Length: 416
Image 1 (cartoon, rainbow, N blue to C red):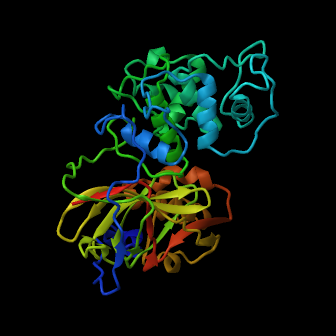
Image 2 (cartoon, one colour; image 1 turned 180 degrees about the vertical axis):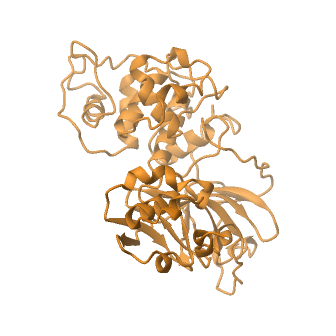
């Protein structure tokens, strides 16, 4: 057994955590008679984009029409898309404003267009025009989101675009940005996940899905499981019938209840799989236990702006029931710094590492054995060593045993 595995003797506990007895007072929640979620008469419960539309509508990013419809198959103009981007993202300006010849100051979307331009989400055309009433193609939407969020392709662009059967239709100017959007799992293709249709006008439903996935990529919302998200691994779950719906915003108390301290890098390239334990019963006002203490919540720990955040994906109750959950923890900001000459054996005793953390420690301390091991999530740290070359210190995010990581529901939770 290598030294690294000896340091991580408790790592397996990350996927099989101890059950908490549940002696603490339960949390009693009031279940509304109906879910408090926005609905549209033309978006059925089984419509492919309903989860994306519902979540954005609940957050006030998208809205419907006075007749109660959403019109999901209508095309989106460049002006309308600018308005959607303005609602979804708050980004600092990266360039000076521009007065487009075809966007008068009293045009309904003038402010949104100005902001989308200054923040780098949208640009104009030659001769200083914006074409606000032109329908926006799917390729332009993906390029806009990649550019506005500062994404660039990490892997070979042509290799990434081979994901799509119609990769040859991607315009040259859009290839890098669409490859970056693919890597960030922003692309959603319905009905065939392998067909991009880059030059077809984007519909309101498609733009909703793209924007929501862009919010996921930047750590602002929890991922929605969908078979149409390119690159997303989907775990099938049986439909919930006759259950109870816990509304968005409810807090579920959970703990990281392992013997191992976790270290990840703020530059961690991949999420780290993690399982937490519900620390108190979640009880309806009629006394029914909806989620027993000791139930497990599986998901992943991600490096986000400002720290690390847990994204929940599934609840496994103490009696074996499983149901999907969309919830996030508060951002963990605790850090520890490793400097050249640090005592690696002392630091890593009883610790579990993400690939980025292992690569950083190996680069700073010179202990190459760390970078040759597989770490949390199965990633190889050695491939990341170049990120940390030449550094005398590396700052890592840390989560200690018995840390509270209470989860806030970002979508209603259906339980049986």
